Amino acid sequence: MAEYAIDWRVDGAILGVSSVWVATAELVEFSEPVALDTRGRVDLGLDQSLAESLQLRWFLRDMDGITEAATASDVLAILTVAAPVAYLGGAVLRLGPVEAGITPLAHAVIGLEGGLVALSLAEGFKLGVGAARPYVAACGDDPACYEAVGVLDHVVLGEDGERVVAMTQEARSSFYSGHASLVAGTSFALAHVIATEGQPSVPRAVLAYGVAAGLTTSVAVLRVEAARHYPTDVIAGSVLGAGIGLAVAELHQPSHRFRIVPAAGGAALSGVF
Image (cartoon, helix red, strand yellow):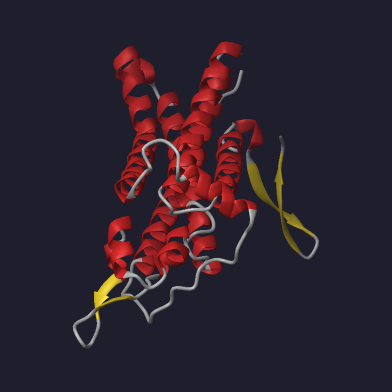
C-alpha cells in the first residue's frame, strides 16, 4: 500500500518556481517580433512525412481544421491541469471535508507538480533549441498563410505599411512539445497515486494509466495536426513528461524521502527507494 505526503515548504517552492519560470518563458516567447526569419526546420524525412499524413486526417481538410485542432489541444491541456482540482473536489464531496483529510490534497498537489515541473523543463528546451515550428516551413514569408493558420502575432505592418512576417520566439519553439509534456506529467503523476493508493487493484491501475495514456496521445496528435509540432516533438514531450510525472509521484512517498548529509569534501544527497 503506497502512502503519499507533501511538504508545503518544499512543494510550495517547487510549484512557485515552476510557475514563475513558465510565465517568464511565455513572455519571452511572445515578445515583440524580430527581424524576418522564415527558415524552416531541417528536412527530417520520416518525421516530416508523419506530420504531413497526420495533418490530412479527420477534419483537417483546410486551414480552419488546423486552427480547430490547435484550440482543441489547448482545451484538453487546460482540462488535464484542472483534473487534480476536480479529483480533490470529488473526494471532498464523496467523503466530506473532514473524512477526506490530507490524502486527496496531497494527490492533487502531486498531479499539479508533475505537470508544472515537466512543462518547465520543456520551456527551457524550447528556448534553448529554437527549432522552427512546422507552419514556418509551410508558410515561409506569406502573411496570408500565417493568418489562416491562426498565428496573427507573426504578421505585422512594415515601415511602408505593407504586411510582413516577423517571427517571435514562439514560432521557433517546436522542440519539444510543452502541451504533451504538461498533459503527460500531470496525468501520469495523478494516475500513479490513484493506481497505487490503498489496496492494489489491477483494474483501477489499468484504468488510471489508460486514461493518462489516452489524454497524452490525444493532445500529441492534435498538436501535430495543428502544425505546431513534428511527431518527434510530441513523442519527446510525452515520454519525458510521463517520466517526470511518475518520478514526482514516487518521490512523494515518505519511504523515498531524500536528505542532505555530510560527505567528504562537502555534502551528498541521501535517500531510500
